[in-house]
Length: 500
Ligand code: ARG
Image (cartoon, rainbow, N blue to C red):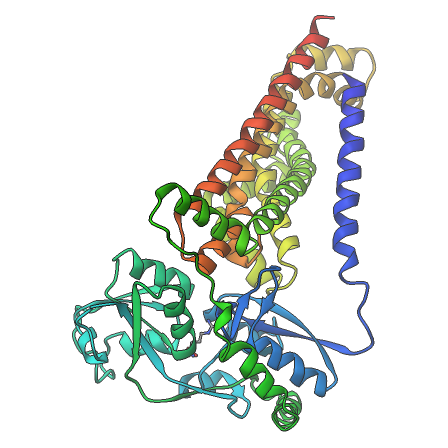
């Protein structure tokens, strides 16, 4: 039994070291140049999207890299929700944002914009054959938009909106353009309103079903920095000028905006079986979906694993804090603090804890660490109860026996109580790990590319929903099944050592 635990600990240590090693590598090659954090929302092809290698790519990304390198900066691209970008600039979570962001009076109040770098309009995407032919026709209809964008503003009925006046117009806000499109394809809305270039890409990927038209005035995209950061703004404006003069800008337009080939589809033959195979190939192979899934699986596993370790450490501390009440026969400061901690963690949703941790405490930095800490703290509350229950389940006489042999409280715990309690605790801890694996499915909220996010990625590239979702459901199920089996074997071995 002792040897099994030792082996387990050794494995855990090796595993953690491996993970730390992998994470450490990426930071080691920083040069003398200052690195700026560039915020974007990579859900807006061709300006920004996640490419087949899982990296942020697109016109804006190429442009900002060229501009900042002219200005003598390195850059680190941070992918976040569109509506969080301005807030992040203000709080210093990011230094610059480039996200196909239109200059509006309202936004000008919070951030400073560079000189414009692109002119666009809003487009209305509708199913082929729709009777909607103007913006005005959207009155009273259901419209999908990307949350917080100018498209959202244009179709939301308000006292200042002169075109959409019908208060019955339903506006469904999505975080991603692709989700809005899936909604349209599924018939949940009558139209999607989005900027012209992304609209063209969306239509190209769904040629046989969708079409689009322009019916709005022009708007201009610009790069934004925090209000008052004129030094950086000047550098960006100068860089933009140079990049336009030296031809880089035009190269980027050709590469990303005028290039039709970034849109992938698969051909239908009419044979159900062949089509299914082609579809699977399109969904999982052509867009490197399988690589996303494998990487996502790894991320899910290691976040859960590290969180459980943190949870166990915290759990032990908190359990002893709570047990101090039993020991002293009355509430202690430690037991009260532990009680409040457990109460708060159990009483609030994990996703809210994650958002607070990432956005408020970590200021949108170190997403994975924020996730591990959140789930560690979250899991700690549950683990502490598991440990406490495990310890209290050991017969009272054991403590009395230990004490009468001359052991101190902690010695008795160490030599007599905990070794027995471990048998109750370990299987329950295994269950906690299994639960955590499923709970971490929300880390996509803070742009971590876990397993669930991998399916999201595939959906946004292919507009296919069923296959990617089915795939991750099967993968989660298999992990849980395998772990449950391992746990059962482990428990049986523990019991065997009992009989001996
Ligand atoms: N141009 C629009 C706006 O400023 C939409 C931009 C959306 N960009 C994105 N990366 N999601 O509101």
